[in-house]
Amino acid sequence: MWSFKSELEHRAFAVLHPGECAALTAQLQRLRTDTRPSLEDCRARLEAALTRDPAVRALCAAVRVHGRIKEPYSVWTKLGRLERRRRRQRQIQRQLAAGRLLPRPAGGEAGSGAGGGAGDGSAGSEAA
Image 1 (spheres, rainbow, N blue to C red):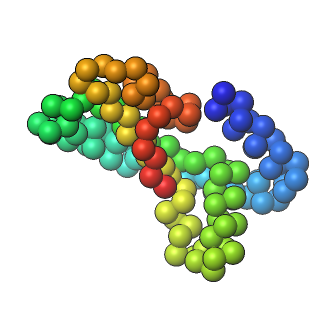
Image 2 (cartoon, rainbow, N blue to C red):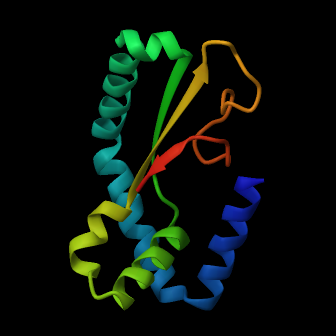
Image 3 (cartoon, rainbow, N blue to C red):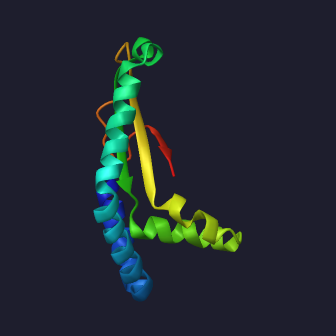
């Protein structure tokens, strides 16, 4: 469902605001290329640290960490809200990437976010 929503948003954004969409899409593509190694390194290190932590192991059977660069429409709408609050310049870099932590409780309870993936709308804590 998330991929359908994302595709609709992107297509509507491209039709309604073609210049902004093209510029932001190009910027995000460069960011994806430039930051992919560090994003993956950060994701792997955080997942390994959480997996080794005794308190986390006592509460969770497994932990998965996902990192991604946000979609153009999502960034554009968030930047619009920030611009209205006059904080845009300080916030732009913070809005481009997101992380998601998906713990699976030790008891394997249903509805815990287990089995979800980045961007699929599954449960988890996303930090922007």
